[in-house]
Image (cartoon, rainbow, N blue to C red):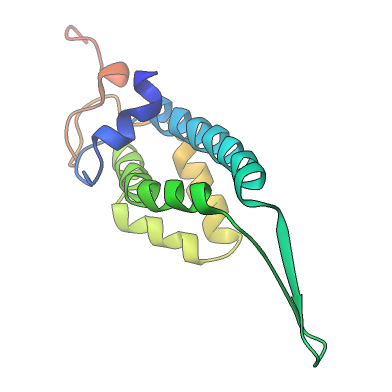
Length: 137
């Protein structure tokens, strides 16, 4: 369970490095909790609402109270984790902004998040515990 909530303990820590294990465990945790909260939101606060106007436009929305609060609490740890993950591969944390470039930026980030981090220290600090080189190496 420690690996799932580690990014919340490092809430706004943009310095340092995070290995693949920490990153992908958080992604799994986030998706599972989001699905559970979505179901709870539907049960507790109702389903879809659709508004239809006289002019023919329609607007549909969900009451996503619990999911919205979870997203609000999770946005800073998520961005910080992405920055630290890029640091682990010896890249600038500013590359997170590639998220704003549809498809190509998303694919590049996905590739970088899947890359193995540097086993030795780099300009962003020491390697995370699980990915360090043995002392006699």
